[in-house]
Length: 284
Image (cartoon, rainbow, N blue to C red; front, top):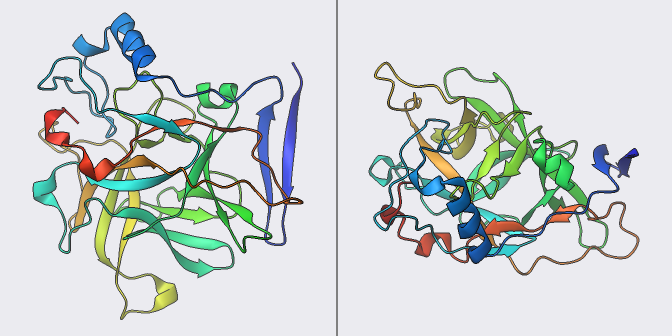
C-alpha cells in the first residue's frame, strides 16, 4: 500500500500532510448506527474516560441517552465550561474558539463571540492512528491557505501549554473524538489515546498587543489530578472547558486553482446548536 506526501505550497509556508491514497475519508455515522455500536460495546454501562482524561461513570438521567447529533464537514468550536459555577468573569461559556493575530500566518487561540469554520483533515488510517489534523482557511477568498490548530508543549508551566492556529503542520493528534466516545469534542491525543484537557485563562496579555489589552486565551493541560485525586489541577484564573463542534453548513468549496485541496476532509459528528443542549441531563 503506497504512501505519499501531499505538499501544500503557499507564500507563507510549506505544509506537509501525510495521507494514504487508498483510504477514503470516513463518513459520519447516523444516530441509529451509533447507538447500535454503543450497545454492542457496552458503553452505557462502562466507565469511559472523559475529555479531561479522568475516568468517570457515565450515568445520564435517561440511561443510554446522548445529545442528538448531526454530521457536517465544517464546524465551529464552542466553549463549554465543564462546571458552569466556576465560569470566569466575564463568562466564556458558549463563546467560540477564535484567533488573535500575532504575526504573519500566526495566531494565538482565544475565545470570542464568533469563530472560524474548521474542518478535520485525514484519511481513515490517519484518524484511527491519531494523526488527523484540524484546519481552517485563512487569507483572501480568491487565494486562501490553510491554518492548523497547533500547540506548544511546556510553554507555561503555571497556566498550561499555549494553543495556536498557525500556517504549518497540524499539531499531532488534534482531532474530533471518535464515535466510540459518547460526546463529540476536540481532543489532543499525541499519537496515543491519552486525552488532554483544555482550559481558558482570563485577563491574559499577549505580547504582540502590549500590556493594556487583555484576552481570554485557550491553553491545554495534561490530565493531572489534584491531591484528592478527583479534580483537575486547573491553574488560578482559568477554567476547564470542552471545545464542542457545532455544525457549520456554510462550509464552501475552494476556488479553482487553489494551492491545496480537501481530498481527505471528512465528516465529523457535530451538534446543531451546542448552546441549546441541556448538558445537565448528561454526565458530561
